[in-house]
Amino acid sequence: MYAIIATGGKQYKVAEGDVIKVEKLGAEDGATVTFDNVIAINDDKDVLVGDKVKSSSVKATVVKTAKAKKVVVYKYKPKKGHHKKNGHRQPYTEVKIEAINA
Image (cartoon, rainbow, N blue to C red; front, top):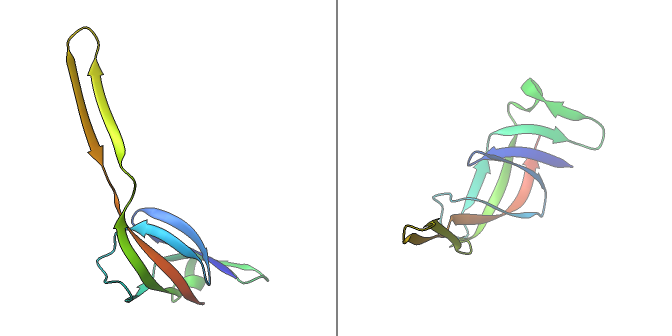
């Protein structure tokens, strides 16, 4: 059984026991979070979408909150002596999927 959930502007295909990285949630480590925005559920017999998954949810536990590896942004204009180097580390939350409530 798997579900497709939406959080942080992205969609994720999850099953029970999966560990995924999502955009930063405001939760402490070890806290339980519930994803209510379920798009589809596949229960090995058929796929449920639309009004059939309106009351469904996915329960997960926060493993950790951290920052991803640095992405270097380098801007350069040839023949002008202009260059600028910036870095960015995107924060994320790692969650473990505990249950899919269909």
